[in-house]
Length: 245
Image 1 (spheres, rainbow, N blue to C red):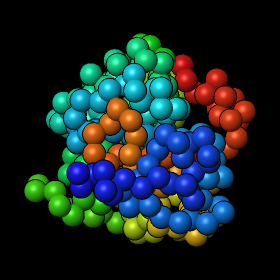
Image 2: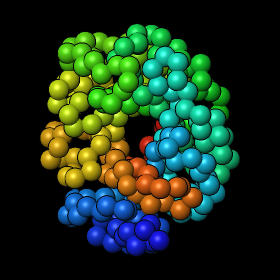
Image 3: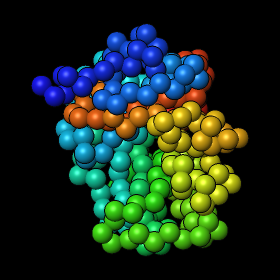
C-alpha cells in the first residue's frame, strides 16, 4: 500500500514515452535541461535489487544496464552471473562494473574483475565505480588525489589491455571534487540526483548521467538507479555500434 501511495510518475522529468514506463519514489524537477532532454534511459543494478525480471525490464524500454560484478579483491556480487546472462538473453545491452576499494592494490582488483567478468559475448565497456565509502566496516581510507589517480590509471590500463576497451569511470560529486579524477583519460558517468551535471561538474564531459537512485522500473524490486545517455537516439546507436562488442 505504501509503495502504491508513493508511486509518482516523472511527468516533468522524462519524455512522454518514458513517463509512461518509469517512475520515482522521490522525483526531482531538474528543469528543461533535466532527464527529459535525453531520449535514451538505462539502469544500473546490484544484489540489492534481488532477482530482476529482465523480460519486463526490456519491454519497459530500458536501453542499457550496468551490472555490479565485483568489489575490492575478493567480493563478487551474488546476482552478477544471473543478471549478466538474463540481460543478454533478453537483448538488453549490458556492461559490468567494479566498485573500487582503497585498501587493496589496483593490480589485485583488476585481476579479480577480469577473473569474474567474461570477455566472450557482446558487452558494453567495463566501468570503474569510484566513490568514498564512509560506511565500510573495513576500509574508510581516503588517499590524496594524486594517489587515487595513480591507482586508477593502473586499474584502467590492466582492464583495457584485457578487454580491448578503456573502462568508463563512474563517480560522485564529492569524490570528483576531492580527487581531481576528471583529469584521468576515460569516458565519464556522473552521479547527480539534485541538479544537472553542468552545475555539479562544470566543464566535465560525460557520456552517462545517473539522475536518481529511487527510480521505479517494471521488473525491478524497490528503488533503482536510472541513467541517461548524453545524446540523441541516433547518437546512441552510433555509440552502441562502437562500444557494444
